Length: 390
Image (cartoon, rainbow, N blue to C red):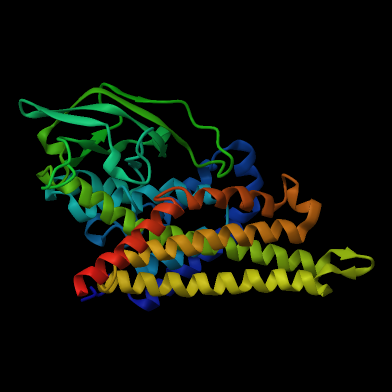
């Protein structure tokens, strides 16, 4: 059964309109500034915090807006319309890091962290990926062991979003070898100022300027027993998988927003740029490219909305999120590629929006589970379901 959303449709319409207006009038004009500085301007960060965007998916009892996933994806499609770094700034608070606490934290852990996460006073970072373990957490090598009443954590994490800014790391670590009873992965809450936590230099990336990632090394990091999420070692892997599944629907929606922007830029360019004295949009091969972009965006939007609805109702929280992420992120890549093609040589120039979009969306097929991992989840899940029915 689906829960009644905390925000009714009328109030949500007002929130969505406010976010759309903010993105289109405040953020879009400053995309070049974000790209050049590789940072989100402080005044934009302040405005997003004041709008409640650091906690829009955190329940109201903890100071958030309490939006459910069907509402989350509508906002994500707006966030995708501009520089993806803006969403990245508060994405981990609402998504993969914050949802671990919302879904699996003890009352004490929620009390300690969630209100500060929702307000933006604390930036939470999801520390799962490692040099030898990416989309599949089962390969995790970071270890945690009991020492008296404490836990001691050792290991290295890679490509951790918001790590250079983080106040809290949600850290996944192996407490025992995987066996029949489970994968042996637990999750811990580690404040960034804990002795032994070393945050590496900021990564230099292909795109998404302003979204900061880095390595994080944990060397004999000692945390109290109260840092173990849910108070149980068995919670970790399920927390990771649940949080990632929800996050995949969000990323799919983000991809739809980016593809919509690429389409809008393509249509505007095709209608105004001329070749041989006539707008290039009058050429049928250009129209065919626009048609492919439009069809992909419409299909992606419909898929995201349906997947979010089925997630909230509890009908499908496994295959649907993977299918949506797979289709929408691949679609965004194709749409951005066509946008550059429609722009011709102009589309390859650094200060043209479609050039940035082309680089920004490439990452969407990699993080929170690569396209290949999504295919394995979908295909493997279908076969397992068939076996159960047989």
